[in-house]
Image 1 (tube, rainbow, N blue to C red):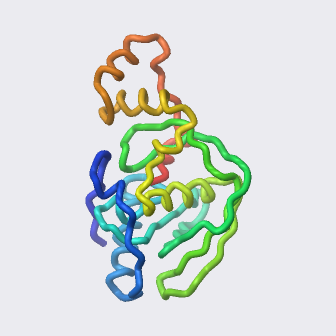
Image 2 (image 1 turned 45 degrees about the vertical axis):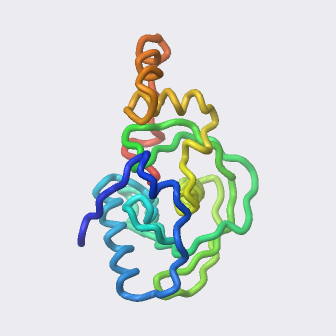
Length: 193
């Protein structure tokens, strides 16, 4: 299938509220497949439509590992209906290549969404990569970014600057300091989306 063009920060589509999908036709199925292909090609575990320049409420996630068969989930018009607890961990994003920092999320969630046929589905998850990825991707649909959820705004700014997404003076100062080592991602190639 077709690979879509990723959008990078500060592209304005990343800060826009995505529109609800009302027609569940072949174009939505094609978009979902193209998004999955793009996500896999870029070693992500999740991707939201705004990240490929499409302002629609659709996201794809696949948290399977090399030992498990692929099990992608397509979420259309997702809404988190319940959140509980706190989960802190490193996150990356396909729209911020190379950037990783700690982000605070809910530890358990209940999400309702529609599948490719338009049928409503309820999913509960807690304390795992799927839980984190769902929250990350829904933020994209709401025009929010993982930098908005950083545990330390300073660490996030420094990490972003180091990778060309912020003030170059901050990056230079960071490199000059001895504390300039970036944290390693949770697992090699684990970028949420």
